[in-house]
Each structure stands twice: as C-alpha cells, then as structure tokens.
Length: 335
Image (cartoon, rainbow, N blue to C red; front, side, top):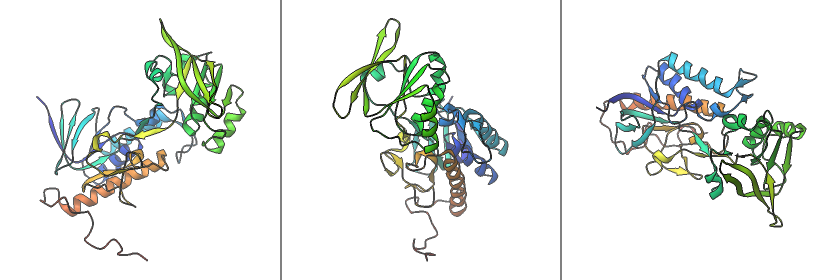
C-alpha cells in the first residue's frame, strides 16, 4: 500500500541548493523532507577537486556533498532516497508522487533539481553511450588508462574534464569550434602547460566511429568549421562536455520558464510564478552556475518558504492565485 507523507516543506533535489535549503528549513523548525532524486548530491558528485568553496582550499566534490548531506541531516532534515516523477502545483497543499509509490503532500515546495549534461544529439553519439561515449570524466576516466581520448567543448567543464583525464590517458585532444576557450583563465593556463593535452581549434564532432563486437569506440570524425573538410582521429573514449541544461521537466507546464527552460524567479528572491513554490540553484541560474551561489539560493529559498508559511498560515484557506508579498506596490521602499 502506497505511503502518504505530509510536510510543511518538501525539498526536491540534493545538490548544494537542496542541502542548504534543508539546513535552513530545519533551523526554522519546518521539519522539511528532502527527496534526493536520480543523482544524490548532484553534479558535484562527478567532480574531482573543488577549489572555490569558501573555507576549503581544496576538497573533493563527492566529499563536499557528503558533508553537506550530513549537515542537513544533523539539523533535522529527513532525507529520502526517492525520485519525484510527478508534481501537481495546481492546488495547495501541493502533491508530489515518488517512484517508490510514496505520495508527498506539502504546504510549500523548494525545487532544487539542478541541471544535467547536454549532448550533441548525434545518432552515433547515442549508439556508443556507455561504450566509449561519456559525459562524466570522474565516472569513466579510469577505464581509459594509457589510451588516447578526446574531449568536446570549450568551457570550464571541458577544460576540467581534459585536465582530469590526463591522470589516466596517454593523450587528450580537446576539440573546440572556435579559436579561444570560454573557460576561466587559471584553467586555460593549466591546460596550456599540460604536455598530455593537445587542442584542435575550429573543429566539431560529426560522427563517433566504433565496432560492435565487442562494442566500443575506435575513433571520431571531425569537420573543420571554416573549410568543411572532414578528417578522422583515433580515440578510445569521447567525453562530451558542452554544458548542462536545467532539469525542469517536472514543472515545464506549470511554472514560468525562460532562457531555454530555466525556472523564472522574482528578482531578489526564489519565488516562482506559483505562490508557495520556490526554486534555487542551477535550475534557475543560467548565468553564474556555481556551487556557492546555488548554496546561497538554497538558503534564500528556505527563508522565503518560512516567510510564506508564516504569512499565510499552514492551514489557512487563501486564494493562491494572488501574488506573494505584503500588498504594497513593488516600488515601495525604492530610493
């Protein structure tokens, strides 16, 4: 028989935003339930060294997330290993259904579902996923010891993946459509100094080449974006590192979105287009996309949820079509 759980605050997602929201919601005595989702800990669990987390000169991504989970749990957050498959925001209390069959009923919801890796959409890319094509160097780099591999992309993710993969590969070729990288300067400097990394400018991946018995990648075809000429490179592994897309599938038809699927929030807050629903982290952030900003937004979301519940009253019958606020014009208090 399916279980029904009731909570004042349901947090969906378990990255820096979700766990921080759990810490603050617990401190506010809201007894939050946090549902971890398909990737407990989020993107940082597939990252190696984190060097920009305040207070830690260097920490492994998985260790940071273990610490944050433990912190949220110690504060009183109930953490559940489930996946929310359906979320009804049409009426309050809101109703979420888990893959486990559990139904979660909540007076407020904090969305912290983060973002997922983007793919190029090539037929051969899809055919060899898990058999030489990957979007996670820390997950799969170990399998390419002594091999030649390629990384596709030009941002922080691509450079970080390329640098990490030199721990295993004999050679890493970074392939980028342009002649300059978007990555931070410190990462570019490390890339240029690493003798195992070669950069192929003005090229794009057009096909992954491989075998079926046993199934695996043997090389790639690339195209020069200036001349259109195609050429082949030998490679045993292909790592796609072209960024991430917000995981907003649960709410795409219920909340206002912008910038290609990011949940839109009211400036200076985490309030979404539905009162009582708050969003934080990479799900809303198309600009900064940092662990520390996600954590900050998780804090904001918990405080916003606390204020919302205090203003409305958990059991108060209120027209939820009305916008949040104190009834004052938006310009009140402006200089």
